[in-house]
Length: 143
Image (cartoon, rainbow, N blue to C red; front, side, top):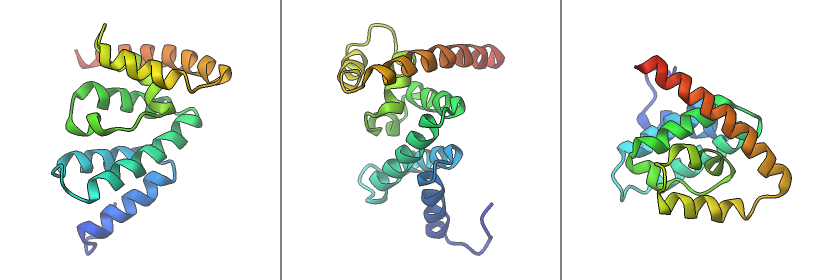
């Protein structure tokens, strides 16, 4: 929790630092903040970039929570979900977060998958299975 006398800019800078450090909760706070900003706001791209760098660190460290949260962000259809860069973390959830048979998502996954080596592909498959199970359990709890 930030001190009460901090300005919104102080809070935003602290959140960006935490996000870049791999703290996935701060990364999602940054994405949510970016989603509330208008499209033309100059802070928006930097917030998204910092959040994705933090998510990359969290995902590469094996954070299933970060993957699950990213999948839910992609499923939400919020504006910021359309601006997320294609990345290692992004690929790991794109197949699960996308509607079945969506050509755009299939194309994105194919493009990013082509950039990965065999070990990354094996890791992606394992993490996608874990993520599918976690998302299924999460949806069951919500219903």
